[in-house]
Amino acid sequence: MTKAVKGTHDLFGEALRYQQAIVGTARSWLEAAGASEIATPIFEKTEVFERGVGASTDIVQKEMFTFTDRGGRSLTLRPEGTAGVVRAYGEHGMKVWPQPVKLWYAGPMFRAERPQKGRQRQFHQVGYEVLGSTHPASDAEAVSLSYFILRDLGLTRTRLKLGSVGDAESRQRYNQYLRELLTPYESELSADSQRRLQTNPMRILDSKSDTDQGLLKRLGVRPMLDFLGPAAREHFDAVRKILDELGVEYEIDPTIVRGLDYYARTSWEIHHDMLGAQSALGGGGRYDGLSELIGGPPSPGVGWAMGIERVALAMQAEGVSPAPGKRLDIYIAPLDASLVPAALKAATELWPRLRAEYSLSARKPGKAIREAEKRGAAYVGLLGPDEAASGVITVKKLDTAEQRTLTPAEVVAWLTEGGLE
Ligand code: HAM
Image (tube, rainbow, N blue to C red; front, side, top):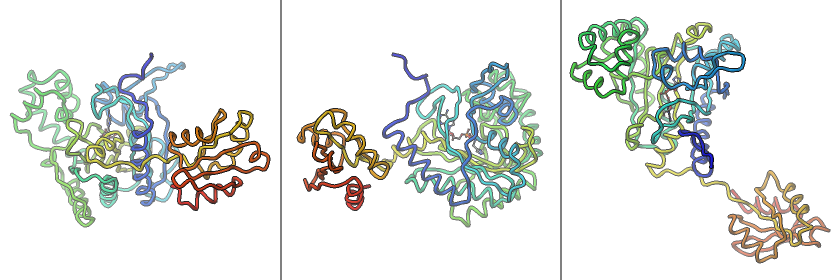
């Protein structure tokens, strides 16, 4: 049998309930903070990511699903959401809206990474972007929302790592330092990192090669945080001060390097203690300058995204369950095969207030009750010729055997008054 593509998953049952719980909790926090939902296309012109995420990143170098359409244009399945949201902000003139504009999104992202636990080729993110503000309160707001959402989901074993990747000028100085430090050891670096040494030395810190990481450790590389210029330092200190006032717990990570090039100044990641290698539940940062990179108006921004599957794994690891699936309210069984359409009609009159299913074949009452129980229904509805003729259903509550003959409107009233979930 043909199976789903490696690194992609069908979502149903409990896995989908985790996703819904995570998106639902995120939605309630983000909308409370004044954000509106945005759904950008799943594919964009390749240049949006090449320029936005950065040509020297692993994402652009190795992980994008890029294809040529019938008109010869290069398109890419989105590896992340920020570049598309920033493109939409510029394209729809949101710069003249009251600022900042707060947008949130949830949906599938695509990266051609080697699949393993917590790492898929199609995965889902929920994300938040605040556009049009350089105020450190916006950074602190975004960080704190990512923290509060994970806490509200019941997670306790998380660690928020906060750092700064500096502004363009501090990064230039840091890249210069790294180039001088590493050039004498160039031959010891992996082929990828030799290339990075020319294009963007900071990316070497993010290398997945053990020999690269060994060399960095041996040389005792100084962290980016040591190279912050006065403006970037002042911004970082202001963000920290606000986070302290908000009671958000974080640790400073002077070595934080995010996998995307558009970051400037504040950057953070939230890791989970029980997830092993793929421990990042989410990450984000400030990205002033991204809009210009993709041809939009100058507009600062800050935001984050969480990996929904990873948050679900963390919830499972901590024994936190999503709300159970909604059970079937009523199973309607026709006593005669000719009454199947009448059973369907009765169900349509209960929808959408009640979750009702009907049987496609005749059922004797005993069998109808067993079927209803198998499907997890709370009530069974029996529909014989007499009931059909007078537009009623005989409804039995399965746990108490209490029975009433009612019109569909009365069934809705009885079942909802009975405190159905
Ligand atoms: P990111 O750190 O690349 O940031 O991804 C955010 C989260 O998505 C990760 O922490 C991880 O939980 C999840 N994730 C990434 N790749 C995979 C994968 N292959 N399989 C499963 N989960 C994965 C961004 O994407 C930025 N756009 C975040 C952002 C928004 N920055 C500013 N605004």
